[in-house]
Amino acid sequence: MKNPNRIRDPIEDQVFLAIVYIILAITVLIMLYPFAYVLSVSISDPAEVMAGKVSFYPRGFDKGAYQTMINHPVFYTAYRNTILYTAVGTLLTLFFTSITAYPLSKDKFQMRSYIAQIYIVTMFFSGGMIPTYLAFKSMNLINTFWVMVLPGALSAWNVILMRSFFRNIPEALSESAQIDGASNLQIYARIYLPLSKPILATIGLFTAVGIWNGYFSALLYLNDNTKYPLQMILRSILITASVDPSDKGAYADLTHSPTESLKMASIVISTLPIMCIYPFIQKYFVKSLMVGSIKG
Image (cartoon, rainbow, N blue to C red):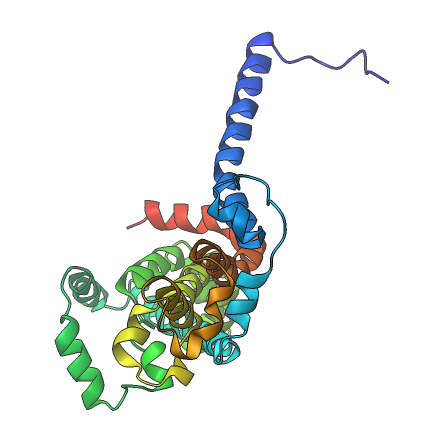
């Protein structure tokens, strides 16, 4: 039943909202189309894919591309490695970043500006690939689990972002806790970290996505295929299927699916876990990133 006392929006506002909704609907369709196309090709009949008949909806059904991926000798090992690299690497990144940003956010820490400048320099200059490799080799990190999680555990950009977020937390909270006898470690763990869930979630997701999708570090520093992450195995399968189809060796069963279906199946397998996590923490993004972008 319509409310006779309801105040109707002006016609200009109604037209404006209608235009906004239409633009949003078009944008959503444009954003969804690549995902729908990837999923459709990965499960469509190979003959339909090779004929170019698959666009938005799948044509036929064939799970051969996924079976090819799953039947790889070290697929589950690589999946387990990727989960471990992502979980441990993300936790280490959040710990080192927050424990570094906390003192840099305090005005009473006199060295904070000098240390911050040193971090900024590292954003523009690096040691280079070969010196970095030699440094890791001298530390006996090559072909170990830790070479995949330690080098990226502390990023200057993340430290600056988290320091900016910490500086927005009222200093009165720290002073009150200090009056009650709390130490800096207690203030960091029991006040700052619980109030910093948005920035922790944002940096955590960015780090997790980077580690999950990364393969270059494994390509440089790992020699044992039982330690490879999932991306390296998917890359090996695609190269074997597309470059030299007559000499597949251990990948002899790759002839089951066309290369295009394998590519799309690898995209689905590699991105699906991250896409499942994203909706639960995307609400923190706008708040944390806007705060970090405004404060210096």
